[in-house]
Image (cartoon, rainbow, N blue to C red; front, side, top):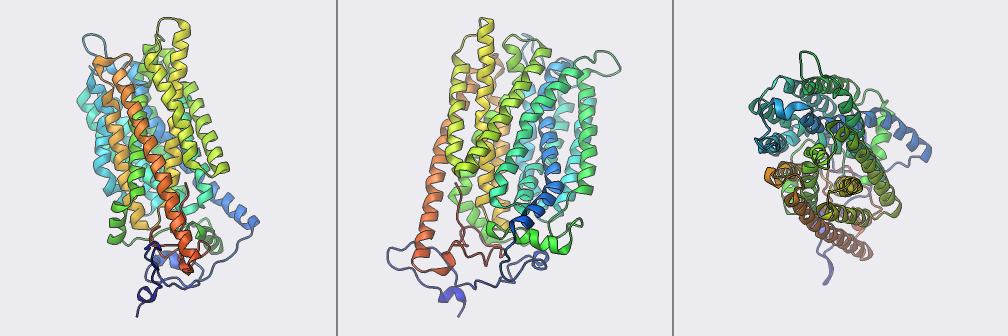
Amino acid sequence: MSPRNTARKPSVGEPEFEHNDVSKTLHDPTRVDKELSQFISVTAVDLSPERNKELLRKIDKHVMPVAVITCLLQALTQSTLPFASIMGLVEDTGMRTANGSVSQEYSWLTTSVYIVMLVAEYPQNYIISKVPLGKYLGFCLFAEGILVGSHAASMNFTGLLIGRCLLGVFEAAAQPCLVLLCVMWYRREEQIIRMTLWYMMSGAQQIFGGVLAYCFMFISHGPLHTWQWWFIFFGILLASFGGFVMYWLPDSPMRAKCFTDQEKRDMIERLRDNQTGIQNRTFKYEQAIEALLDPQVWAYCVINFCTTLPTAGLASFANIIIKSFGYSAKNSQLLAMPLGLYIIIILLSSAWLARRTRQSIWVMLGFLTLSFVGTALLMTLPNESVSQRIGLIICYYITFSFWSTTALGLSLLSRNIAGQTKKTITLTMTFIMWAVGNAIGPQVFLAWDGPRYYIAFATHLGCYSLLTLTIVSLRWYLKRQNMLRDNLALAGIEEANKQDTSRSFDDLTDRENLSFRYVY
């Protein structure tokens, strides 16, 4: 009789979890990835704090620079269009209407990227699960650079649209690669601050992008327009970095030529307590079905949608909105810089609070409240004096407080979803919703509703309301799951003991592994 059939049955009133009578010292060889199996220990190995710190420093040296700069360049790439919009791109490509407003075609240049990403997300996630991660990330960055540079050759809406659509194919790979990098190299408690550092680059790009855009505004002569030089510069930068990533970034702890075999074993061992696995290239249909039926997966989908819809619109129309307050084009570029600093402060403080209190969701709610306030004031304050214009700028900055929800939400996903196939499907689903939100975001900024865009900001308030309901429900659900598993452990079911890490590398999902505990 199989172990599953000999497992203790729950008594009346006891939560009906499926559980296995597993050995505390042996892994199931049929479930462990073949490449991974060469480096894992049969029993848990205690690593000293000194050894762990030494390994973490080595990991950070090879992974963090690539991850941080990738996020910075991705953010800068996504902002090239908004910055170019006030460098003459709109006029030179015929996207200015007769009454002087920006045509709806401009919105479609952003939306088109995310529609393509919506289609490309699952194929990209499938490819990522099968190929060397570092090499593929570098290749996609290189291809993005070529496509961004080619924008300079487009002198009409059609040409730009084609370039933007092709760009979306390769942009779809970046975020899933970064999430898997985090899961593959870092402990759960280490992931919050590192994911936050990555997301901080979205704030840093406002500063770097603002300075660079301001400098490019002084290019007024030569064979090319200012915005064309802008795209060429970023194309070269991105392609060059993509080549570097292919050379520098290890594909996995098992394939890292920069580490000794003993270091590889210890790096894998330090992730045992994660119980989320590292790598498995076998597609498991039961895990895919579980992902589709798991309420927490759908909660992450809603979080992604409700945060990216406002982000996409605010990012695409950032310079246009600021300019509408009465500032010049050059000053609008500079005023984007304090926003970057505010985003960095928000992300750092939210990560610090989440790690210190171990209450990520309550921290998310606190910062989300600021977005409600900022958006409401942005809709109601008049724009008739210098002081009011300053007030509007401050309110505009405050609306971005919800970005803490984006970063912490992604860290919850990486820490709470186990099983490689389930993780792949979850990433696909959430990033599809990410693409949907980004595609819709610019479209709610209607040309006839400018320059205050009341409909867009009212839509954002609706997103924040749905987001609040979702994350409160998610916290209740995750807390309840932990409580049910604790009850199983108290009832004597050994595999529900949260100290049991014997199946950490067996590619079990968070639902299959009863010793797994959710964080919230």
